[in-house]
Picture 1 (cartoon, rainbow, N blue to C red):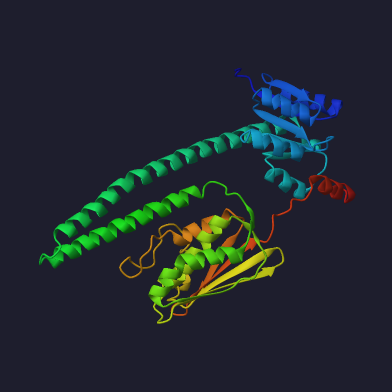
Picture 2: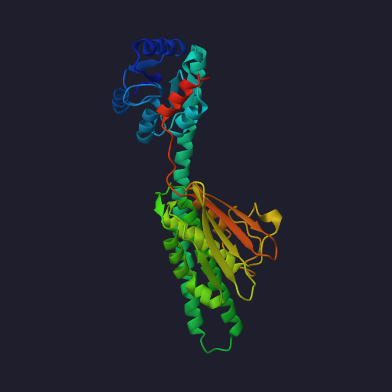
Amino acid sequence: MTDRLQLLVVDDSDAERELMALTLRAAFPDAEVRTADHPHVALRMCAEREFDCLLTDYNMPDMDGVALARELTGAHPFLPIILMTSVGDEMLAVEALRSGVTDYVPKSRITAESIQRAIERSIHTRSQARVINEQRGEIETFAYALAHDFKQPIRQITTFSLLVSEALAGSAIGEVEQHLKFLRDAASRLGKLVDVMSRYTLLNQPPELAAVDLDRVLAIVATSVAPYLAERGARLVSTIGAPAVYGNETLMVQVLQNLVMNGLQYNDNAAPCVEVTARVDAMHTLIEVHDNGIGIEAQYLAEIFKPLVRLHNASEYPGSGLGLALTRKALLSQSGDIRCESALGHGSTFHVRLPTSEPKRKAPAKLAAAAAASGGR
């Protein structure tokens, strides 16, 4: 492995490719500059060796520079990629960055100094991304190990407190039994907290997205919360009937179950009720979860989605302080969002927005044509 900077230029124009190579050698005299006259050649070269930065033209046969970046990012997620184009268009730049391009430079502005800055900046950005990704992996591994290690003493606390209770059965020591019950309840809460923290960590992984039937999701939620509804004499009213959203069914079950249980738990009404409705607005499905619970003061509406934020102590209303944080994180991972409207003593309404179908990317070729027709920038 050489310590020399490894650069690859991809351009179907012989003249522009060689000019770019000369510019790079002027900017980095000690670098090894290689060239490719076709995107497929570049893909093959990247599969055979590691490059520190790739610079690609936009307009090329068979595969444009944005499509090439998308292909390369899938196989080499931390490869710095700079897109060079004679077409100036902000929408194209946005599409390029979404496809894995690190930087976007107009050919007319390229000099040895400017391209040196762009390459150094791109390499630094990708290097930082690699470090962050490695640290995230270490944190997730630590979280799983921590959750595993917590579970064993929790099970032991629960088991031995039950054994002590059985041994004391029939004895006139009710205060000890009460203390043991508090101990079991604390172990149960700790176990649930470990579970929910593990789920929160899992949401760092991108979920698989597809069409999700909201009616089916709500049916699963209704079955899950049925015992609690019966215990509280509560009602879950739903009028979904909406088209499928584009998301993840497992996460959507978690989202709606969290919101429904939130509305039932933080509720002192004699007849607790949670109503779930949905409607379509443009390209999104808007879901509303309304309850007749205790409500939330306006100054706390921005705080409730933060991890471990609790507005009440556990003796008043049980909970982990992660339910709404999990809900928001699950929705963000599905390109959705959530907000809350509430007033103290008047219940709460959670507004969820999700795409109704897979977002369609605009074809870069069309963007280029539109930019060319308007004279570019």
